[in-house]
Image (cartoon, rainbow, N blue to C red; front, side, top):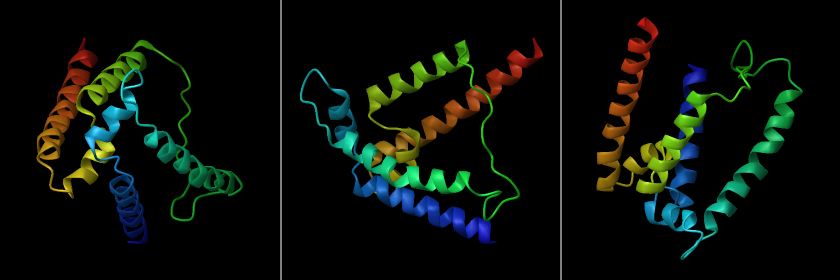
Length: 141
């Protein structure tokens, strides 16, 4: 139960931070990506603030033998860059650049009641399902 409560609290805090920093506003995101036009640098400050908050936590975590609420740390071991990573990154970047909506902020954006998120989130979930189906089909070949 403590793990569920901690996950909920972390998710709620993260979502509130996204809303307060206006990362759920597609216009702010698109203005940040428009470096050749009417560029808005505020998102860079949000990301910098996130790093300032996260880095000490990662430093402290590396000193621990195990996390407080889990048996061990779940640290990715893959470091290779392959075609799947590059294609997936390109698709993500194109979608983010076209819509100005990222998957994480889209979930928090639902709380704002904006119609765009009620269209984006089901489309995103459909994309997840399509990807899972494609993975299964390709694995059989």
